[in-house]
Image (tube, rainbow, N blue to C red; front, side, top):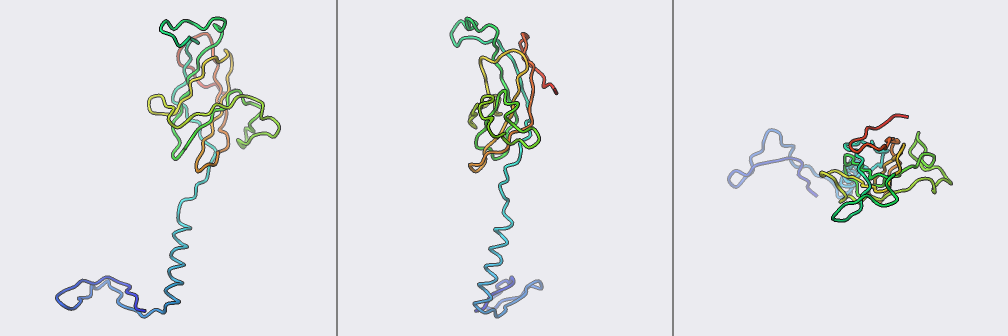
Length: 186
């Protein structure tokens, strides 16, 4: 087998060799197969691996509104005047296929690793958030009926069918005031 290891240009009927051309070399079929295997292996090793890291829960909006009915008049929900609607928006994570937000999951999530603590699955509520749920082009979750006081949130995302660990907790003190709420470190 002849394997060409360089570049040449055609000029007339013959070939004019460029100074950077390596030329023709005789390589056995066995060596060609080995070379192909090595090159293929290098491409497989060089491809980026999909590691699902703990997300950075980078918030771009956290707002509180009154808990209103979805009607033309938009009246407050009777008997639930003490509750609020909470809107939480975060910056998208490259490659994410879906998100989940865990509300009030302190005690369910190991804060040092983001892993779930065994036997604590009933703590808090996990809200799925499809990739199409956006506010201003970024992922968000709109939660009606949120209690006033401190509310705690964790985020995780899915890539290639695998879920990331939960993010660090984000704490928001939801009060009577309507508008933007800032994250509190507790």
